[in-house]
Image: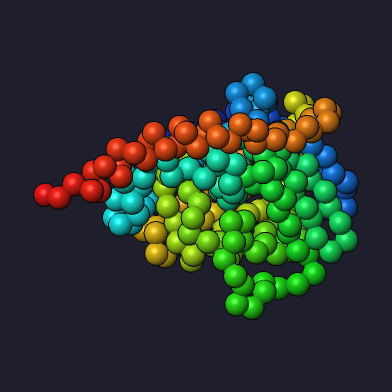
Length: 250
């Protein structure tokens, strides 16, 4: 027991030593800006929780959800391939770029992928809506705990994926985010620590964190493929074998 405790203490000390010096910006500071997900050198030594989130999410799936994932076609069933909404989960964790636009009563997060992710609003002046209708991005409300913005989101539909490996979720999905603006010797970052709960699709909650570095460049929204016909043709090629197998009588 003593040896184990010493090893744990050493591991924690090494992790703390490896992290860069962090200064937390106050809630009163101006968080407005263009942020891009940080990877590799752009992290400046920051260490995200659950860097391989695909593996983490899959390990938490209920049996039915795992079967649904395995039966999903990554092209034919991907709404983003034809410029339709994809929700906030896989975008925010994998390829996020956004403008953070604070207001008096709500914060708007305008996504770079404007066609498929759109603009998300975090309301600061009200509780969750009663009988909220399920949507791709859910209903987000936030409050401040010191210099941390705590965001609670419910009201998701069940059409999006939790990550890139097509992991499904249900309308019971509940997302809690704790967001801070920090500075390190490498620059200013938005730190997002998330916890995802779903009693229908997950065996237990999973947690992650990601860092988004503030950029001095102007954000240019990415317009989804103008040649939607090409994407529909690709999707149809993937769907055709599935349709043929569905017609087979065995």
